[in-house]
Image 1: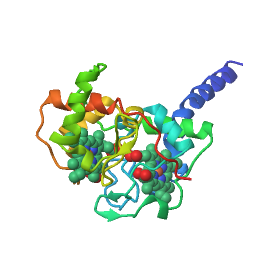
Image 2: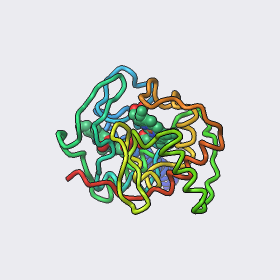
Image 3: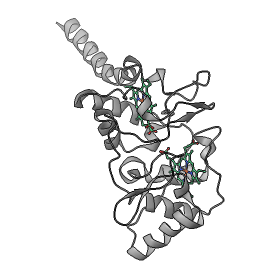
Length: 225
Ligand code: HEC
Ligand code: HEC
């Protein structure tokens, strides 16, 4: 009886580990690694999709789940991945794999676990912007730094405008983590060896402003299908 109880406890202990193992495994099972870098050590291959080894730093978990259920276009001109592989515009590609709610949730949870280790992100306190503050930062985004020449954004009427060579930022407020945006502007080399985005000299206050501004952009991009 004692033995049986012991065996039961051991089994119970084992089973409670299994879910966390299958978490990591589901990204492998669903073959996400054939297109996406899932680990920083994985440097050999050319990937046709964006790097996801820091997905837990970069994305809002809710957005990940929703994207996996109903993937939309983020890079309207296609994607140039490290090291320099141009894939062409999304309408020429097969649709991104999509999933039912349960799998989407498990996949999103696994992605949320993928973080850059040993790189504490500079935290950003995001306070709501007044109309006047937002207008000032919008001016910097469009004129002073010309971010809009490469990134789609929203005008006052909520219409999409802007360049196509960078990822769309129309839904950045639902998609990206505020801390990550500021850190990307500060140290892009942590996330990508060679970026096509110009490296800006800006102080921490300006990085926070851009992050605050991007968090106000909320609009679902066009669905891929
Ligand atoms: C056939 C290649 C391919 C496979 C397989 C694939 N993806 Fe993707 N994925 C892409 C491409 C290409 C994009 C970029 C789409 C865009 O920017 O419009 C993308 C985008 C994404 C994004 C958004 C990332 C970002 O930076 O915007 C996430 C999250 C994602 N994929 C997760 C997954 C997961 C999880 C799996 C496995 C279930 C998976 N993908 C399987 C090619 C693939
Ligand atoms: C010359 C084009 C260009 C300009 C100008 C530009 N970017 Fe980018 N940006 C890119 C590209 C391309 C990427 C994708 C990363 C890469 O390819 O290295 C990117 C990535 C980003 C990302 C991450 C988005 C994602 O989903 O991965 C943010 C946030 C961003 N840029 C904000 C800005 C801001 C803020 C400015 C202005 C201060 C700006 N960008 C100016 C080209 C540009």
